[in-house]
Length: 412
Image 1 (cartoon, one colour):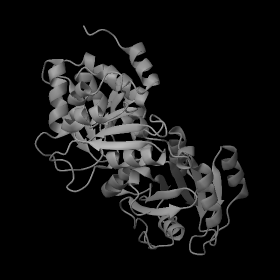
Image 2 (spheres, helix red, strand yellow):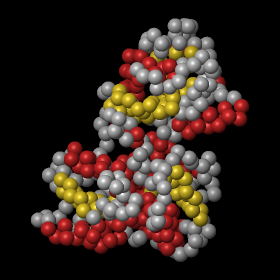
Image 3 (cartoon, rainbow, N blue to C red):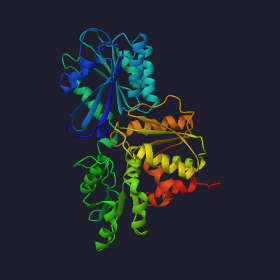
Image 4 (tube, rainbow, N blue to C red):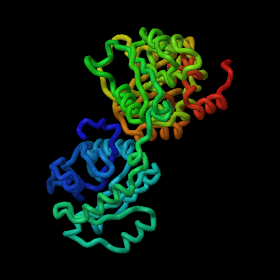
């Protein structure tokens, strides 16, 4: 359970005013002292993450947030951090107490509803004051599940766990495939994995490990090679593989060594589908054709790492895009959960595969880009497009390929 990546966990956010018992509720749910509890309002200053196992959902991540009614300059920063959590939660717990429902709660309820995030309203501290039945009925009529709890006494917690199971997206009951649906049982996928300076010593990176596991779970075979060994490996096979998957930085060489009849894509494109919206990313990649010298491109990396020479996001991707455009582009790089409030100055957003994140946060960024009218794509698609192998890389995904053909225009 502890080894499950955060990106594969159901993200559950706790929101509410200061001192309504969010931290106590979290501690009671996890049966641990996960968050500091005090009678002093505003004890929680930054989002606190607590991974745990919640059956039958499996691994989840609770995120306890600062009170949304925090005051002062520092309070505004805490509220901003709290609102960032909205971008990555799959289920929201809106915690209140009897007699205090008001504008703060309505704002968060509307924000969660507007994002399509299931919400459970938790009236805590029921041992201190009774909840108005009329309020419960009114919220129920608006589609919100309501639970009454007393965290210190453990009252209402079974009902809350049941509500969490009821609200969880179907994907957490039946996890989607990464590539298992592309490789029939008993067939072979060849994974091309360069061993370069950025490869972790003695290990594979997360998308590669998860892809191997997904193939095994779907009763398919897997062969792992480095890029310079691919041609020899394919020659030794009695029949062609069902799929070849490569690291995006080796795309061009692998495309040259893979027969045209063999489907080919990259780990990054697989994760564009697994973590985001592949069709939206495909359409976003077409905006590369419209880039001109001097345009601004935002490059987003989900995880923080120390860039090295020939870093894929900071060196190789910008180089390939500049070569395609035939002029200088201005690149801004962001890491982690930081994302601009105003996207209007960018002509394109390029995102990494987001293997460390849950799908909700990637979809939130896609929605924000759509609202701002700024196209968004991901590393693998941008690289394939700029290297001229876009259609080849989309071969395993008929719907995405059709989206490309219906939206693409000749380059002027």
